[in-house]
Length: 422
Image (cartoon, rainbow, N blue to C red; front, side, top):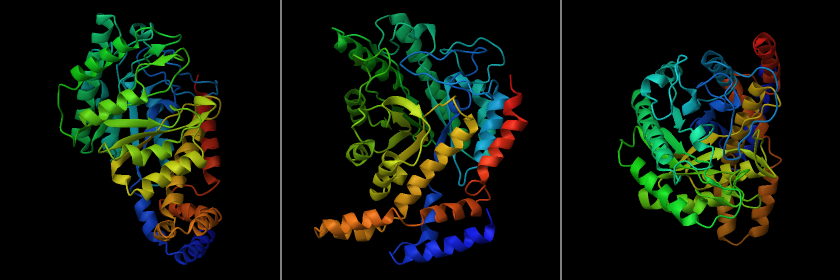
């Protein structure tokens, strides 16, 4: 897009927001504080690098589609992430799963992983002056095939997964130490039952026991933040999910841990945005996994829709940006994977920008005075304001493609690299 046109449009937008008491220059400084953790698994369909052509399985997760260009090596994955970051304004983070280590062709089971297997990623993050978040991978493994990991009644399996998660915490803490920014280590397990179980209680007691064992080792908060991610159900887990929202919320509150709110992990009529200020009354911090469920937890590419908008608004309205860790979680293999990545991150950024551009003091004043018509009218009027011009200017000042320009860049990257991958 023409630079002068972008600047001119921004100046007009700046004036229009100023009439509502909003300083767009200050908003853009605030937007720089929104660091989104980029989920590495979008570029390779959650395959990882433990074995060639590893298959995804467990807990109702699946990558659909076979669009050309899947990353099959760490070099390719790093190249893709570099490209994605070059198309995004602001500074982002990276979110890794434990299956993405640099194993150099060696068979390393998950209860044997060490910092050395992720040092290459740490060095990559140092180069980019960014942080890394981490996740144990409690799926796509023979010891998860019966549907249970940390809550397994098979003591051999349970201890295996306890050791795995312990090691991911140690690795994450070292990431935080070396990178001088805390690493969020988020635990999600696929444990549950397809049909109606009789003994839910034992599985949940075992999960609590496992978590207690995992968290015996303490790490400095400036290096590591522990998080747990609940889920309503998954394919093959329709009747019971061991790690439910009630279970993890209770554990997080009692033990001062983060709870991860994934907006695909609840009933379709529930709004995660509504949960944020409720949970923040009882925990110090939250982790978000922002996705787009269509009919169920289908992990579609994030778009700027009402749900994502409400999530961003609730965080901004609660003045909680410093208490919420933001990550994305989707994997679409049916379209250009880099394009899916960039669309999703930009949509999330736009949602936060939209929220920050609200004349919040005026809206709160209307609400406190019972002027609900005025509140509703102003909220509707804000939908027509030129927030797109503000975002375009943000892209311009960050020296990344503005508007539709990034589409061509991704098309060229596909022609030069993705189309040549076998």
